[in-house]
Length: 60
Image (cartoon, rainbow, N blue to C red; front, side):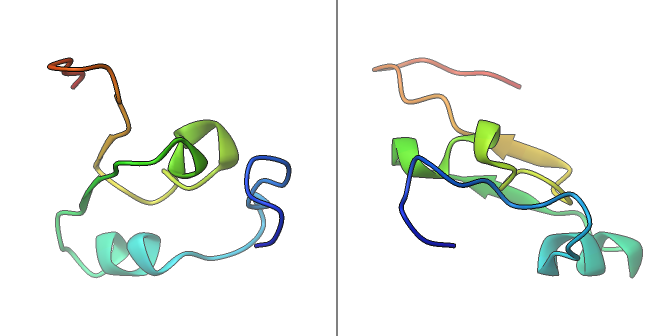
């Protein structure tokens, strides 16, 4: 992807996380940058995707 914060991952593209999940693995990501926010399609394929950047915040 290019131009962080503008483009999002297309729904038709396979992801490595999705491939691992289909193979039976549990997948998770814990990110620390707004450009990795789930609204850009990057959470697709993960069982858990924590993109909450609020200080001390936590989402499940």
